[in-house]
Image (tube, rainbow, N blue to C red):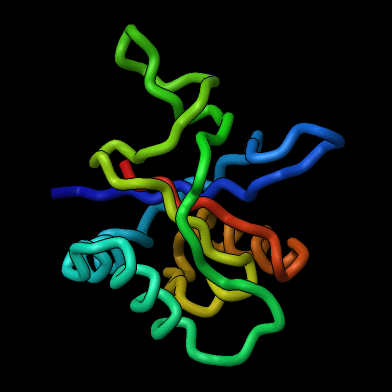
Length: 138
C-alpha cells in the first residue's frame, strides 16, 4: 500500500479560522509514520504516541485532533477529484490530526534527494512554532 502525506498549515484571517490554502505534499515521508500511528488504533493512544515521538518540552500544545471541519483544497468532489471544500476526515476515514510546526519538524525524516520534501520542511521551519499543521493522509 502506498500512503501519501500532505501537510496543511492552518491559517486565521479575522473571523475566519480553520482553513488552509497551503498544501505541502511530501514524496517520501509518510508510510512508516502512518503505519506506526495506525498500530496505536485509538485516538487517545495516537495523541500520546505523537507526543512520545516529539520528545521535549514545549510552551504550547503540540498535537491534537481537529474538532471541526477545515476548508482546504483536499476535499473530495462528486467527480472523484480533490477540490476546495471542507474536510474532517482523511481518505482512510480517520479524523484529521494536527501537530505544531516545531514539533512536526522534529519527527519528519526527509530524504535529501527529494526537493519537494526538503522545501516542505524548510517551509515548516519558517512558520511560527505554535502553528497547527494538519496531517492529511491519502
